[in-house]
Length: 65
Image (cartoon, rainbow, N blue to C red):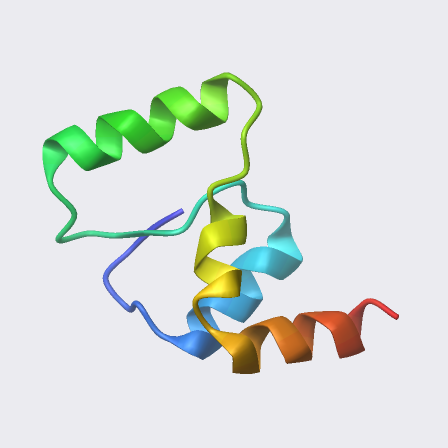
């Protein structure tokens, strides 16, 4: 998901939809292309976003228990 709102609530809602990645609209073209390539190979870069935000990780664990 490409978002102009890069915050915990937006990330949590994105996770609930099953998105593979969460990218800020201000991300460089090179980074965006890299993320798209990772997803096309089956990776889930969104996991890095979750790890970087412990409050979101905790909320995800509680939601899906």
